[in-house]
Image 1 (cartoon, one colour):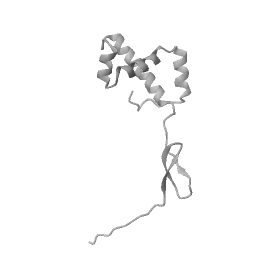
Image 2 (cartoon, rainbow, N blue to C red):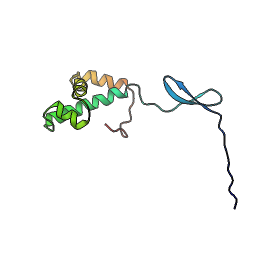
Image 3 (tube, rainbow, N blue to C red):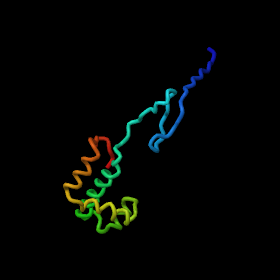
Image 4 (cartoon, rainbow, N blue to C red):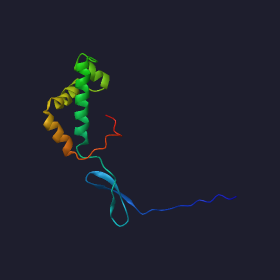
Length: 109
């Protein structure tokens, strides 16, 4: 049995569209990859804010400094993110709704 090598060449390039790297096919059409909503970071930070608020209210941590150490972030960051938990419920709902339909089943909050 002899070994044969098969080489396949695919004419494509990697380009940038909207600041993201994309694979560009030979006909210059970008291969679109499924992207997260633009405001996913905001939704994630809202979830963190409410989670951290619950943790502080339950007494799991006495201070923001303790919480920050446990989460591996700075106390300044925790303080900034926690401000999101103080927003009116209608504002929070509007922010989440603005992000569109989110599949939360496979997200690590």
